[in-house]
Picture 1 (cartoon, rainbow, N blue to C red):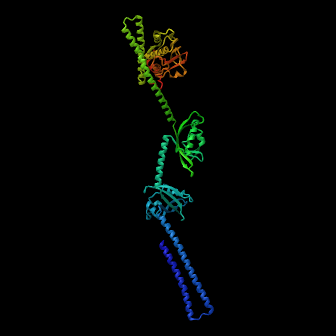
Picture 2 (spheres, one colour):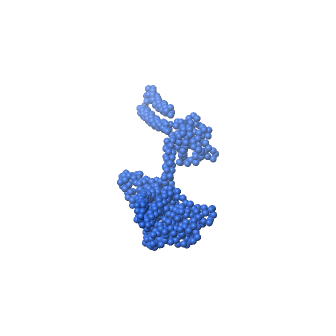
Length: 594
């Protein structure tokens, strides 16, 4: 380009020299003629004017040539700058001449020009210029010719390509060239950008996975428009009809969301948001309840919301808030369960403390009687026979009380350890109850109380644990004897229509207040602290009945009396072994029973 510039300059100088020589030669000819002959007066003036005009034209031509040369120099300088910029810019450039078939479809192309950067990335200039794409062992994008054929001449074409040779990512931009039948191809190395995008995409995938596992919903609150923006698959417990979907996200009116908040929590949430907007606090963490569906107003979910100010305007006023919502209903349920368990544990601890204090008293009381009256019998051998009988009766009674106490504690320990075992044998319930009636009448020293067995079924033999059944009946009747000062205590059984035997103990004692009926089967529970006992008898009875496959309960009216009842499956003692085991397996133990 510089050589061409020099050639143009030399040509212009030559033209100016020829013109000047021609002008000067004409002047010399005129002067020579003057010497040869005398010029008339009128013609002298004419030649002077002609000479002046020739000089003027020569001067103007020289000035025009100089200006033209200056303009061409500027253009050449601009072209040289553009050429240098094209060669040195960090962009791959190639001009390609398209090769089309008879239908006008592009079937190939020829590389006409490439810049040094293109050479460094693809092939050297001498190996690619003038060669067809089909002749070269290179590939720039899959289906490149198809892309060229689909290119919009006005908009051009842009696509991404990974150059395996250099391990780089290229953004390829194709435009129609000013040269007819050619296109200009520009390639930008965006490896760093692509790597960053890949890292960001990977991070987003990991974050999305973490959000899915944690069930967290990220959101943005646009204060000026009054809407929440969140992912389309994570709507904030709002009916879909109230949300507007757009490009993978939904917008939810803030008023719609706040209308779902539980009335008891709404004021607290609104007050906290005002503090955040007012700058009193920097972040928000609130737990509240929402009603996700209007048709289920009693069904709510617990939500934990965190929020901070994301953007502020030039005056420092918040414009947007960002935050997250986490459904914590299960956690709240667990917390509530733990709180209740803690309360029960504290109550159990108190009851056990009371039990230890009570059992020490219960143990000392019969021991004192046994030791005291035994001492009297030994110290006073001449005591009257009637007094001796009375002393021995007291010793026997307290001995039985002490044995019952030890038995209850042992049964409780077996229940706690899950080792309470049952032994099933054929048992005649009628004969058992006749025997118990005689025992209870012998123990009853209160003539104002009548204890009797109401015989409804004189023939009844079932397979059960006779020892444990006896224990339950004795506990229930003894319990009735403690709280019945006058009247009667009736016990018995009969067969129900559902093939269960119904056992009952009815007394005319003091009864139980309605608010305490649910507590009578609790461990260490004593409704009357002055009555003898550890508060374990009814709890043990309940566990035994459950393990035998039945149910237990109480019906009572304060001041009238109580009826303690339980049921057992009617498994006839005359059944076959196989049917007996199948029948017993039908009755499952209630959950939570050791």
